[in-house]
Each structure stands twice: as C-alpha cells, then as structure tokens.
Amino acid sequence: MAVVPPRQVAVLSMANYDEVCEAGGVQAGEEALVALRELAISCGVDAGYMRALNASTLLLRLDDLSRADFLEVLQKMIDRIDSLVVPSIPSLPLVVRVGAMSERAMRSLVNDAALDLLSYMNHLDCPAAFLTGDAKDDWGTVDTSDIEFISHEQLKYMDAFTGMLTIERFFDLLQYALDNLQEGQSNLAVLFFDIDDFKSYNRTYSHEDGDRLLLFLAQQIRDAFEGDVVCHLSIDRFAVLTNSPDIVRKCAAIHSATRAFSASFAPEVKCGIYQLHSQMRSAAIALDCAKLACESIKGRYDVAYHLFDDNLKERLFTRRYVAHHAERAVNDGWIRTFAQPVMNTQTGELCGFEALARWDDPDRGLLSPAVFIPTLEEAHLIHKLDLCVVEQVCQHLAQRREQGLPVVPASVNLSRLDFGLCNVLDLICKACERWGIDHSLLSIEITESALHGGSNLRYEMDRFRAAGFEVWMDDFGCGYSSLNLLKDYDFDVLKVDMEFLRDMEANERSKKILLSVLEMARKLGIRTLVEGVETPAQRDFLRAAGCDMMQGYLFGRPAPIELNLC
Image (cartoon, rainbow, N blue to C red; front, top):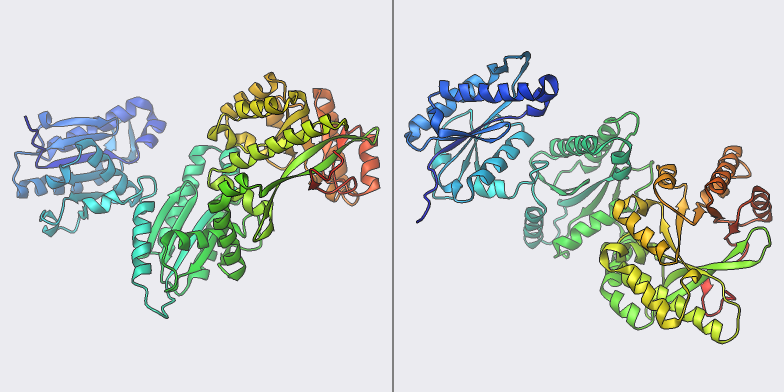
C-alpha cells in the first residue's frame, strides 16, 4: 500500500540548543523544547500532530489546514519567536528557526528534508524559510516578506556545514562558465583558498575550535564575494568563481581578518588565483591551476595570494604527466634508487645508507622528488613507488652479498598512505623473502608529520618492529608535537631535522636544543642520526655530543645505488 506524503509540514528548532544546555544543563534543553511545544499550540497546532525530530527540533504535521490557514500559523510562530525564553534562564533568549515544506518537497524522506532545511537556515542565519518542490509547485508565488522561499534543487546543492555550494554544483557552474566563455573574455577567475597547516591549529586547540575557524573563514569569503559562486571544497579548502575587478584587495582583507581570528595562533589563509580564458575547457584543470598557485606560497608569511603563471603552468603539466605515467615508470624502470651514506659518528665508518627514489624520465630527464612524491600521494599511487624502492634495495643487497662485498643496512621511506593503500608489511616481507634479505638489514623511516595519522599507524609500526624491522622517526623536531610522539610511539632511531645544524654556529640556542635532544634520546634508549652534516666542525661537535650516526654532503651526496659503495 502506497504511503501518501504529508501535504504540509512545519519545523520548529532551537539554533542555540547547545548554548542553552551549557548554561542550564540538559534540564534547560528539555524546558526549551517544552517552550517550543507551547508556542506551536498557542499558534493553533494540534498537540497530537507534533513530535520531536531530535532534542532541539519539533516536526509539525499540518495536513488538515488550508493553505491560507497554514501560512497564518507560520506567520504567528514567526511573530512570537523573538520573545521566547527558557523559564530557568530568562536572560538567555532562544534562537528559533521556523521552517516549512510543501508536498512536492516531501517526496524524499521527511526527516532528511527537514534537517537539510534547518542546516540551510542556521548557516545563512535565516529565521524562517519555506522549502518548495519543483517548477509545478506554486508555493513560491505566495507573497510574504518574512519567509525566504528556496527550491529543493537549491537545498540539494548546499554544503550542510558551511551553507555554501557543494563541490559537485561548483564544478557544474564552472564548466558552464567555461563552455560559454567568449574569445577575449578575461573577467572571470577561479580562486582556491586553503588554511596553511590547519591540522596544527586543530591539534593546538580542538576540533570544535577548528570548526569555528572554518565557519568564520566561510563567512569572510561569502561576504567578500557576495553574489559570486562560493563553494566549500573539503575541510579547510574553499573555491570561488568571480568576475570581481577587486580580487586582490578582497583576498588581502580575508587574509587579515583570518589572522586576527586567533591572536595566539594567527591562522594563515592562502589564495591561488587563475584567470579563465577561452582556451581552457576543463573545470577540473582550471581549479587545479588555482590550487597549484595556492600551494606555491604555502609556508610563506610574506604573501597571501598568488596568480597562476607560466612557471606554475610547467609544474602543473609535470604533475599531470606524473600521475598518468606512474604505472609505466614503475614497470619500465624509470624509478631508480639512489643511496646516501650514513656514517658511524664515533668510528667514522660507513654503517648504512638511506634509499631515495628518483624518477629518471626518458623524455623529461630527472624529475624533482618535490614534484612527483606529493603528486603520487595525491593520486594514491605512492605505495607503488615505495614498494619499487624496497624491491630495488633488496635486490642490491642480495647482489652485493653474492659478489662477496660488504653489506650494510638500508633505510627506506614509507608514506603514511602506504598503510591504507596496501598491506605494506606483508609486501615488504615478501620482497625480503624473494631476495633472501634478513629483516634486520632494512629499517623503515616515517616522517614526524605522518605520525599524526592516529592509532592505526602506531599499530602498524608495532607490527613492523615485531617482524624484526627497525622503525625510525624522520625529520624529528620539525613539527609541533615531537615530544608527545616520543611518549606515544616506540622508535629505534631519531633522525634529527637538519635545520638544527643549519645555523648552529651562529645560534647558541640551536646548539643547546640539539644537545638536549641527543641527551634525551640517549636516556630513552633511542639511537640518534643527525642529517645535513656539511662541515668538519659540525661533525666534530656531534662526535663530542655523543650522536650515534651522521648523514650529509660531508660524507657523500645521493648517488645511483649501483654506483655507490654502500
């Protein structure tokens, strides 16, 4: 038997429910819901036709009312919401939303449509809204100044968190703009906004504070580009399609306002700008151009925005080339392993080497790891590169053993993504088995930044150590939570970031910090390796400080593994 959807539905909801509960506890929240019930009843709603949608929202079925009466009930509720308070907290007015839906808008599930409507109202600070159905629904013709009429299509394309457009709708509109762009038109631009190091903000404060920052930035973008196409792409990333002649001033204003959001952290929001032209036919590539312009200034504090230029155009081409040729690069031998020696600090003898991936392209020559590694991570292909390097290292060690040459341990770098893209431990064990390599000859390097991936990564590291591999923390000291990581994870070696050595001779503080790190690691039973050793003075300092291993240009630059003495 078919279920006929209700003809008319209204929603009463508290937008500040959390604030009410914080001020007066759960009991105050319950009192507020009772106040909503009494409001609805006083406006003519039968108590038998209402139910709680959740702790802060009432769903009202008003099937039996005529259209005129239905609108009259809505208007009464709208007129009275400003005076609504919780009895136990009379000083805290309730912020109430009044929503309504027509029959055609109710073709989907009632609760989903109601919650989506409330989300729309909360993010746009809209006290009252009416959700209409398709073009055949004439509710939108009703003349009332207190209710905002929105279409079901409009709601479908709204991001529930920010009230901006969804990424799907943004791409549709961007592609439409490109398809209709005439020769010589250059007044349209796509912008890409990103908060620099947003993860650190979340770690320093909380995810709730992070959400508040995101909503603040969303409002800044919406206000600056009022009337333009604005979109929440993902987490801390936003996009705008605009024909504003004043883009640079607006981006600078958004940057300044966001920095002032938190005086103790000063969040850095960056913007990449790509001017559309008639030769550009792909919305995805156009947004990639703006994104690359944004990424080119991340980590810099002297610039807030950047325009896509010819240099970035070449980098974009290279990135797309890498993503499309990754499989071939692995299968056809374009990926080569280079080795950089690691020295025993006290004896000065070779004690190992770090394996480094290089892409030797037959057409484009050696590609920079700074280009192909982030690209492969973004394309979720990085595990193929890392496993290729492991295979080549195992083969190299086996060949040296068969030739009667000395064999020293190797360390290989793994991406955090490797642990989710494949069973990386199992595949590395199989590579060792194929070439007869003992697990003690292979160490796994994981960067400090990757270790914020959560408890699953800790579990995977424990599995590696249980299987006989050493686990090293790379780039120790370059992040915000280095000491916490030492508390939470077990490491065999700390690779200390080379920045500690860079200005050691001129900066006494760097020297003291480095000495403290080495002493702390020694007390924890963790061996140390310092990167970036370039001078005899640095070598002598580390030897006197009790550092276990060293690596840097003083001992050798990365070279093809087959030509290296390792």
